[in-house]
Image 1: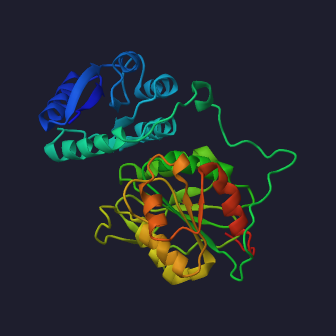
Image 2: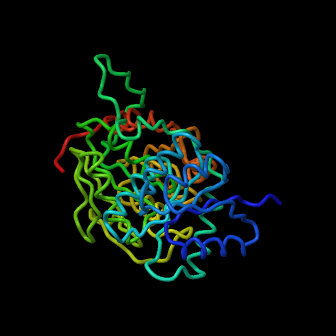
Length: 360
């Protein structure tokens, strides 16, 4: 069996040795190179062409974010970022690296890299190595934003009239989700009439930085949900995000945070949110499932469709990982399948199909 070729990038010799020993001992991996800064990482990636890169962020000379941009602009390679995400600045830089093309991010513990953490890293590295990465043109990484509307806007997708006024958009995503949400929030029109509930598979160390980053990137109100707060009313777009390690559900017109068991190894779970919204709101919700590994969200999206809600999944052509959308399609949960760039227009058309204005 062909072994997975790994390039390790970290300014700490101790960390590089620990990672190299763990990858070598695992048997299915081969460490083809090590780099102590981003410039060396870029040069080795060009020369060695590894299958996957583990990337530290905070390094001298050229940091991990810049190295990610260089690699994805010139020799696209799956990258797993190792980040101390409890540090706010490093958490925000991790999200910038994911937007620049890194496939995944793993929390780096402040102390010893123990066996359980290494097992998690090995699993995530294997998955990342199978992702089909694309070239990110360097000049666009800092400047590209959704384009302003042209003088003649594109036609709105044809959507069947609805007898139910939409009141809520619920969205779930995992691997590739931060970059997808960055695009989606920036591309939805300023008068988008529905609030959004969002589940991303994130951790307690990462959730605050995620909300702050999405808010800064989009200019919208994005924050973590508060247990027991009223459900936002239709009228304008705001985002309430599930905190790390808590399920978010809707019940009796309020948002509740729960510590129930993981679902499909996930907490927060997209299924938990979608199923609660199907019970509470039925056809007055819109469900949207984006890129992600595994199957979380598929059953919940199916529940929404059975309740009469419009359902949308991201097309394989734009997914970083097609696992969650593929499973939803397999279950017959997807009413619409569309690429990321087509989502803003479709969701806007669905939101306006019988929408009534309110206040948020």
